[in-house]
Image (cartoon, one colour):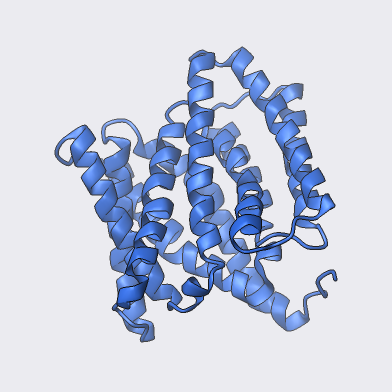
Length: 305
């Protein structure tokens, strides 16, 4: 059965959070680019989720959520934190060292595809024909887009392929964490508590990896760097993640997933303005196909979580 239309009360409850999440996450890809350079990517990720975890613990205490994780949920939260806040973001930050932020955001919009596959395997969710067709259209669009990038990239095809590989690895890592949110175990843990501890675990894993591979902490004494760090830690992490999951609980994951269509539009526009991304007919057609495919996939009668 298809989903019923949203009531006026439902629309009113989610419209502002929906717009905020879309605008915040649409701009983060460009802010991440400014974080790269002096500070190794792994340390920037560490600082981001240290800030985010502190903010989430403060929020959890403010709303009266439990500040402790039950023993049987510790392993679950550790896997969630490492996959979402360590592996995912380390891959994304490295991807943006090779390709533009808008292209990374566009590839990341395909998160719904591995979400659906893993949801079918681990949660028993069905895949509709419309979803499969839409996913195929989106993948064809990305193939066209990146074929153009391989031909025109100043850094060479190897850099583009590396960026694609890092982005796909980030998508898969995030998908693991997303599908975990659909499990019974996740619903047994208060959302602020899971987010706070997940971000803390991610920050610890980020720091351990950064120290092992890059040496002691490095800080760039630049106002823009600290402003970007606070924006990513507070707005893009501690605020946007709870807002997004609130949308999921209010209108369901299928409708909430429409943010994945709008976010790359904002990211590509910002990349054009600030990263001098040059459009061609192949790039425009590839982007249009990718977004159209996502719309078809998300409008399926039985969309995946």
